[in-house]
Image (cartoon, rainbow, N blue to C red; front, side, top):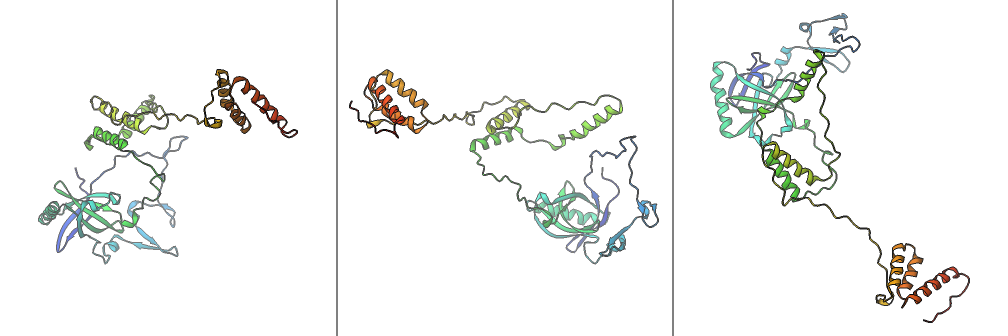
Length: 356
């Protein structure tokens, strides 16, 4: 039920039509508020409003508004001063345009109000404006003054009433610079298909079924502490670290959503997750002398294989090349020994020629 007390009285200016209205809050806060206390004895911490000239506490009825000038002096401002400002929006919600609703960025939306018709004379023009908004599928953009500043508003139809959303001025909305990821990310079609499947599985929800679980948990905790009981413990956090496999996480989310709705989980087909093949370490293939494969015996093949596996330095690779060009087990051994002798005496003697 709407509160009886209005927070602003004035009129809607619709061309030459004036509609007396009262501004009523359309929302109410159910958030939990805590008191500040002295932790040693539980005493309340209070803030008192004290006049610094008289050094005494003053009541709300004695408190007014004042504008502090650049030199520090205070200029008193009354509600009558504000009401008599030479602007049309001082006591009027002035409609300046009608635009499609999708032209309004939700980031601009602020507090919401209901516009209540101010008496019997306002019934006809109020209904006229409401029906005109309905038929045009548009919203009205208006300017009004409230709490010491001119504001922007949007009028739209809610049921049989006209509601007004306060809007931020366009220059009060920050651009989303630096918010999106800097990395160049590519989203595959299969990932989008799974995301779409998850959205379809979750489906729609009646917002009236949603409630503030945090507030309920705080109420239970406060009740338990007041009764001298142990407050309920928090549930264990979900196990696991960062999700690395996005496809697997999406598939798991889809199956969980299907189970929560009592549906049989559908096996994934096109969007199946397959493990990536492990990349084997690359090894250099042994080069062969003369462009032909070696026809050495089994012993020479084993020796060549062992040499290839352990080959790392350029000198050993040269020995491997000599072995690959041998024509027999004895020749291979002889060549290996002579190649070793050459390496050890390379600086002292001149290598001799050998006949096969």
